[in-house]
Image (cartoon, rainbow, N blue to C red):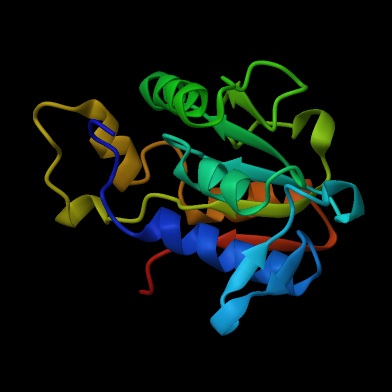
Length: 186
């Protein structure tokens, strides 16, 4: 994504969030041949429980898109991102992969260009699920890239750290909702 941190954080976050939401009965899932899981959400979406999701500090949108694919027609997501370059990468990714750019309330994924610390959650709040993968490299051990400012904000907390993500999630989550934030263990 031309500078976004290249780690498995986003994929781990989406996988853990999807696993927990399925455990809670969201999406239609049945066991297929050889024990694999088959998602029936596209065929019987009227029978499925729908849910609202927010990805705070959504970056280039990998968690948003992964969860949209994992829960077709049963998820309504909202991503919030402060960095202009990441916001535009996310918008382009959504358009390419989902056929929607996140600008309409009718889209599966909506986008807001704003800092998560001041975002009020928009029309979908409170949320059933909130995801986030905050930057976590310590300032004193990170060598800033000379050629891409986006890398710095994705990797070290220049605009918000894990505590800011937790505070935003606490403001926006439903009672008994799921917060899935992937952070370094220190």
